Length: 449
Ligand SMILES: Nc1ncnc2c1ncn2[C@@H]1O[C@H](COP(=O)(O)OP(=O)(O)OP(=O)(O)O)[C@@H](O)[C@H]1O
Image 1 (cartoon, rainbow, N blue to C red):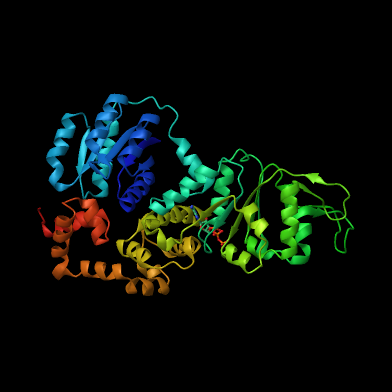
Image 2: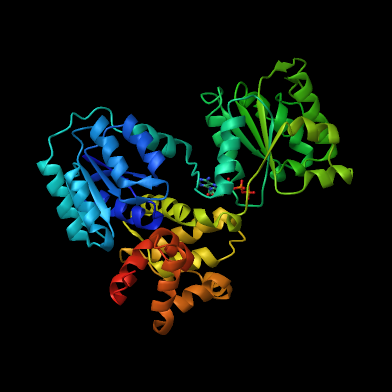
């Protein structure tokens, strides 16, 4: 399979193109910016590099130069806008194998790529860029591109390799367990067990036996020896979800086990030494519970050597497209479907909805919509009603509604382009449409700035 590095900052467009090329048996890795692409190019080998001319933090011509210096034989195709064709010609003089002007259709892109690959010298395929893909599929953790997500990921990277106890806070469905798992995955304990326990689901009376285990016959119903979660997680990570639900008595037992690093199964006379890292999560304000006397302060400090707060999905709207694509990929695999992407209207609705159930709700919506979709793209007709209702109330929705009104659409585009100094990416953001839509509209109205 030929490998392509696609460098394009329009997330929706690049993911759609990726899926289309994958359907035609190419292996595609995506990079959304200059610096990231540069690092990938220097590290990995590809059969083809397909880059946008304009990137938020650099330009395609500079990338071309880097490829020519370090990976001389790798062909480079540039994607350009209308006004940029002369630059593209210049790029070809500098060694690009071809260029394609946006917007382009599917046949065109396949044609240019096939041509480039067939006329390019075959590159000895060294190990392909599997590392990144593997780490993504192994960890199932999507980082996101919003500033809040980047901060979250920085904290995980920072605290993950240490042995500190981490308290993860965040509303339901924000990804607390996923974060706990990624902390474990980058720690030195990664090859040891990760044991997740939902403290909200354990009845008080049996909590001690669940945590520390029991011996056969130690109480009615103890029909065999049972290993507790502490012992099961030995040398690994114990993740206690909804830790605020533990009774006061259970809190004391937990604190003692953590301090002494030893547990005694119920009915046993022997203590077992345990070496665990503790990661806990809660969606309530534990400090308030401490103040109210419902949660022990000493335990709180023991759990809270480092706190990570996960933002609500409504606070990381820049990640919507990334997560939409991630959930779509996942749903395609689970449901054995081959849906390519979302219509612009659907992305707008996703953007304007408040997502009270956070990423869990988002994943469910995309999965259900994938199941109901018979064509290539998810359309708004397969979305639940509450999403469309939420969307028409949002302020951004008013903007995009204006955008689709023929009368002032052209004016809006021109104003946005002027405001953005003709930077299409920026203008598309102002208009709340994808760059591809903007390019189509510019062509439709013959706008020439
Ligand atoms: N960063 C992420 N990357 C990929 N998937 C994620 C991410 N964060 C959350 N998810 C997905 O969102 C859903 C909810 O995540 P998770 O169960 O970790 O949330 P939670 O905060 O622990 O929820 P609860 O409080 O209800 O227990 C899961 O399907 C998970 O796969």
